[in-house]
Image 1 (tube, rainbow, N blue to C red):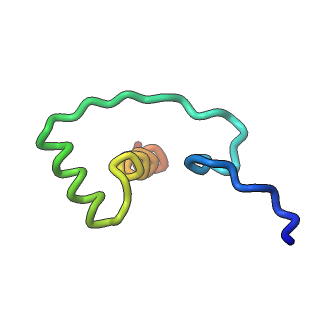
Image 2: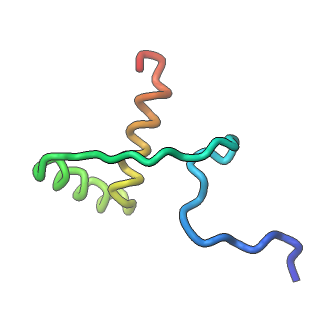
Image 3: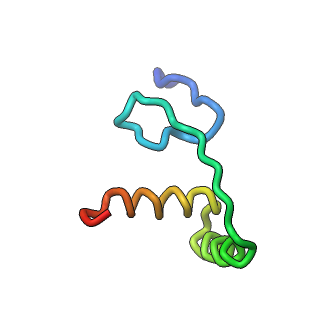
Length: 65
């Protein structure tokens, strides 16, 4: 039997190194932009939410962002 803690249901923490809680975000996209995001997410085998999170993180981590 393993001594690791039981897995909690739900999505893993966005930043495992941070103890600060996540903040809810609401985003509206045009239908055309959503369709493009959905196709790209499908190609990358991820959710649209993860695609948006990854893109936003890349933008915020960019030295010019």
